[in-house]
Length: 236
Image 1 (tube, helix red, strand yellow):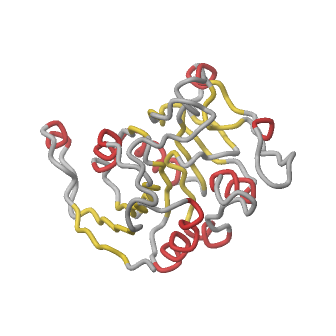
Image 2 (cartoon, rainbow, N blue to C red):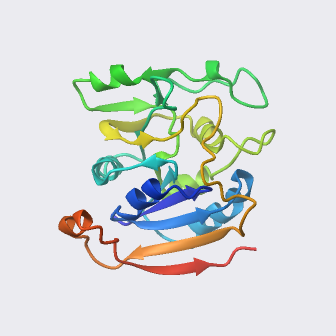
């Protein structure tokens, strides 16, 4: 399968950037975009390219090759799949849900609209594969056809919460794997991580990186970057 990882990149956190760079997958970095600015260029990129699946990842995580591998495996047999992480470091809630999302307030989601799993509950699953109705941009992937039918979007009232806005309209189970865990560096559940914030400080860039050969695991231990060819895409 030929997949692409779309990285939402409003920050420049070295340990996160390094872990993402080592993933053996083509990438589109959406660097220094505000959330509403992402909508049109992401949807245009999906329309104008032909990957089998497009996965989305927030850039405030430390992600392993194992987590990516497990999600890509799920996408071989399912139309939607996701990894997961803690909502933040001060909660035990994971960003996956037991049932469909709700919309108790018309303009934006509130906590009661999600039925989040607790991280300890997930760790005890005997069957490693389970369903969520929410993917919090933690290696959240859909087949290309689904992206065309159900494009990336934000809540119109807030210009953000794109994960909720996209998933509630999809409104079907999303496969997840118990071991596709990602480390989230967000400290507090009541506010985003704004460490090394780029938005408003530099011009937005779309950077398309295409892998040029298979990555050698031994090279990763030596700190060798994943070999890619890089193309800066036009954005107005």
